Structures are given as structure tokens and as C-alpha cells.
Amino acid sequence: MRVRFGSCVLDTRSHELRRAGALQHLSLKAFSFLEFLLERRPSVVTKAEIHDRVWPKTFVSDSGLTRLVSEVRSALGEDADLLRTVHGLGYAFSGDAKEEEGRLAPSRFYVLLGDREIPLLEGDNVLGRDGDSAIVVNSARASRRHARIAVSDVSATIEDLRSKNGTYLRGQRLLESTPLVDGDEIAIGPVLIIFRAGSTASTETDSSLTPPSEPTARISTR
Image (cartoon, rainbow, N blue to C red; front, side):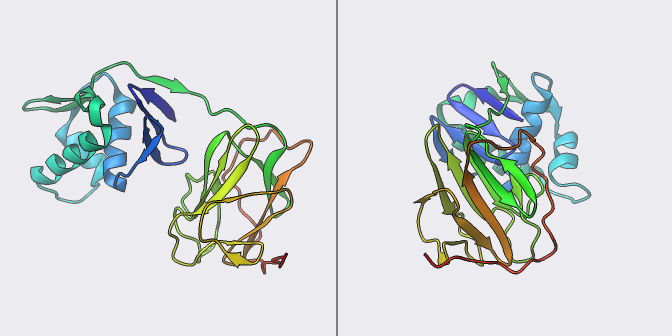
């Protein structure tokens, strides 16, 4: 789901909230809370429903929810008033919001993972162990949100997302956002991902792909 409201865009695929184009940092539970309100808009979501969604089978005091609301409002900035408090009941998203479809980047941008082609979407494509990642990396050495490939009409760059074990490009550990070129080899643990900017790519949009189990990475040393 990708929802635009006010100056913000919430993208559940890349698990990001952006305000005026700038990435806003939210905890996983704060993100889940905002996502829940948008899913149920404009209905009121009760405190009990929020607890079941964000803290399933766990007791959390009302102060925990209050802190979560404060975190989300801070991230929303001038759009904070869209999160409405319904006293004695819960919260609701109040305002216009529009769901957008992810748009495929030019067909020359895609990656190879095992024997599969994964098209890249325009914007941010997260690589990681999380099942909601654009490119799912099934390895114990991959972080949930490990790295990100940012795609525009004419270029693509990759950056590590402070992963524990690092992201390797062209045989070197990635230390900063770096432009990608056709044939670049990206290694996350033993998993090899090849960036391609060829003439065509599969139009398949299912990105929850499983690579061969723990293949040995082949890394170029250009």
C-alpha cells in the first residue's frame, strides 16, 4: 500500500514514511499504528483494536499508546492534525488520502536473484529479510531492512541501511550511496544479486522470491 496525504507518503512496501520527500524515522510499532489508521480511515479505531494490532497478546499501559501517538504526530509535522483523538474511544485518520499504485521503472532496471528477474520500481526498493521487502533476501546474515536501491528515470543508486553484516558491491563493503551500473554484483552474506540495465525485464511484480538456499557469493573485484 502506498498512500499520499498532505505532504506525506506512507509506503508499506518499502516500509517508509516521507514528508515533503524527506525520510521520517518511525519505530516499527509507530509505523504499524499509522498504517492501521490509514487502512481504517475515516473510521474510528478503538484503543483495544490498536492494542491488538500493535501489541498482540501483550499488556501495554495507555501511556505506551500516548507515546506512540506523539511519535507519529512528530513525524507528520504540519500534517499532525490529520491524526484525530476521539476522547474516551480511540483515534482516527481525518483528512484526504489517496492510494497510489507503484509504477515500474523503465524496463531496463531490474535485478537477478538466482534464476529470477525482479523488476525495480521507481523510487526506493528495500533489500532485506523482511517479507515485505521489495527484494527478499533469505539469509540469516541479512538484516530485516538491509540495503536500498533508489531508482529514477535514468539512474539507480544503492546504499546500506546500517546492516549488521554489511552490503558488498564489486567486492568492496558499501560505505556510502553509490551509483549502480549494468552487471554490478551485490552481495548480502552468501546471497548474490546482479543489477541489470538491459533492454527488457520480466514484468512480473511478485517480489517475494526465494533464492537458492545459501549459494556461495561470486563477487567481482573490478
